Length: 110
Image 1 (cartoon, rainbow, N blue to C red):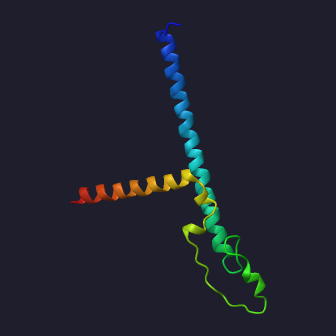
Image 2: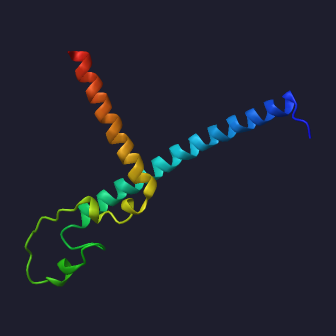
Image 3: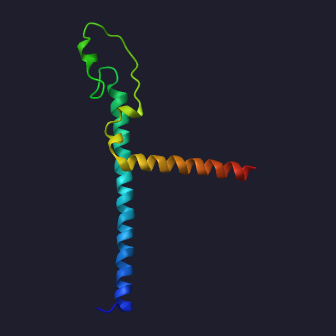
């Protein structure tokens, strides 16, 4: 079959529409992953005293003692956020962009 200008134009329009849809889906994915990260942070902050799914629930077993220990969590504890390969890449891209912005800000100030 011979490729006509009309067919080429239609293919270009379809590609453009698909790229727009991909950008929207990427934004939705970033938003969802950020929400998961925020929920995970909240979970760790609110469950630190008694325990959590990552470090166990020993706090519930210490019924007689009411010592308040500070729970510290790291990025390694984030089993949900760290399970997403795209979230890791997005974080790396944000860090690189922030470093680029700070480099350009310091060069502008000079």
